Length: 132
Figure (cartoon, rainbow, N blue to C red):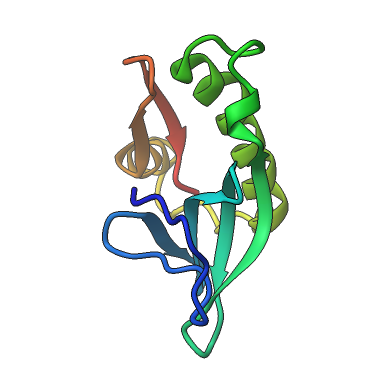
């Protein structure tokens, strides 16, 4: 991630060193900014013209969180991930699940197992979920 300290006429810039991805045809990213002495972590959406527009502020005043969260990892788990996941749930709500694959009950189970998703959590644990 690259910390931006000046907002240029081009606005906020998310580059190769910043977290960004596209989901459901929406390109979004997370940016750390230092603005007038305040440290801000925000979520930005990429507009059709290529500019980045702020959509949600995860932290407005990161520099003021040290007493509440003595370590950055504690802040990341207890504040950042909680707020990011709340935003993700609101931005990308549940879509009606696709139909269960055909075949026998056992073949359906095999197909669902094949499509499972296993994710590495920040604390090193693994969590499994369904892609459907």
